[in-house]
Image (cartoon, rainbow, N blue to C red; front, side):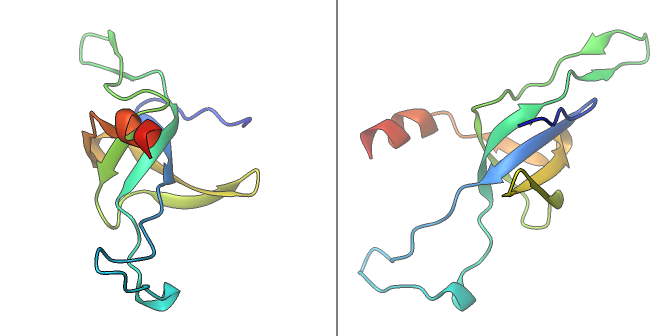
Length: 104
């Protein structure tokens, strides 16, 4: 990808939810909600505080995060549907996401 977010912005790719429920019912596309979980693709350098010191972001590329349902701006970069949002729109980092991905 040839895109670098500025300041405290991050680029996130939504992680699609399962298409079946635990009971085996297939959910049609029209009934699905937008996922609120995603993977950070790129992150800006950070934001400057009142003293002019650069404060780095808490998230980094590869982190799995949760964000608000209506957070971010949807963009298409290199054919991928992505979100650009401020770090403050991110609710938290899913700590065991990489272990869960490897197990699956």
